[in-house]
Amino acid sequence: MLGPGNLTTHLADLGADVIKVEPPQGDYGRRMTWPIVEGVSLLFLHISRGKKSVVLDLRTDAGRDAFLALVRDADAVVEAMRPGGLERRGLGFDELRKVNPRIVFCTISGYGATGPYRDMPSHGIAYDVWAGIVQPEVDDDGFAFMPEHVSIGINVGPVFGALGLLAGVLRARETGEGCQIEIAQSDAAAATDWLRSETWRAYERPESEVTGNEADDFERRAPGTGGMEAGVRYQFYATKDGHILFMASEREFWKNFCAGIERNDLFERWPGSQYGDHARNNTELRVILRDVFATRSTQEWLAFGLEHNTPIAPANSPKTLYADPQFQDRFELLPASEVGADMLPTPIKFVDEHLPMPTKAPTVGQHTEQVLHDVLGWDDAQIAAARDAGAFGTPKS
Image (cartoon, rainbow, N blue to C red; front, side):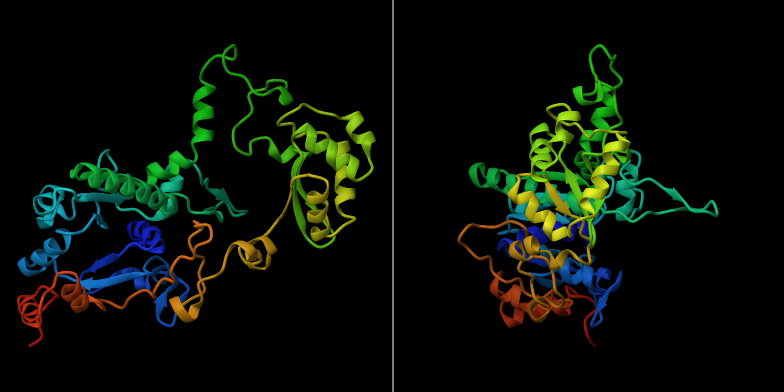
């Protein structure tokens, strides 16, 4: 479910055979958040694509036996509960490796398996707030509110998890020994934002050891976008029909730009430092550039950037991104006709190869009998016996 489910989506997109084990009532993510597409949440459709669904009631002996049978020939198990959830059901790492010594057991949770927050319930935004990535804003009435932002931890945690899982599987195939991997989505958020937190840490050292860069007269600037509001050579500018991001913070790019607009005088007057020069607080230059950028359309400035080797990017939104020609060249959307909603594919590309089209997210238990038959080799009698024993939930009367 959610982040743990997304971990295996990355693998399913690359062709892994992923079996989603659901409780009899199904994954609540199917109806958790908007938009709802033909009765199923887009979130569920996206992270459950390409997988098979098996219903097992792990509170029953028959359900646990079926689970262990699936583990016997699996490469990995990803736990989608708080750490220890499977262990409390008699299906922890120690039990699983008794039937499969090379199993890789991966737990991915909010705050991880250790620490004072380990048992605390949480949502995805909590990890970014905890990591200092998202700050509260205050409206005119004095109410704090959540600003629009990209969710980092709940998205990057699964990427780290998939990477760790693959490393564990490779080692297990070489040595025959499995391992236990533990990922916290809060850790992932902090690790992704390493430059800002490590910068503040570095600034705890004396200025004789740690300074800013030459372009800022070695001033110890706040990390991230700190001070960028007053940037000039690295800044947003309005065009005739939108906005672009201008990024000529290197002297070479700045020189190229000035020559391209036939304003070498700007370079001669303000050549700047070789690297990382944003010309902060140069209001006079900012006014000049504002007027220059307003003379052409966004597409004209992009063409200019290519012609004159100057970094200029279009200021897209999540809504307009699909119309961008670079996006259209790089992403062939997974169509709603195949997966239930138009979706972004994995960004990983195998040159001169095409990855298979993922299947649509399964209905609850859609593949239970198929998997037990095809993967475990159970016959109809064995499947019926498991059903009668409550392996798939309360037996039908």
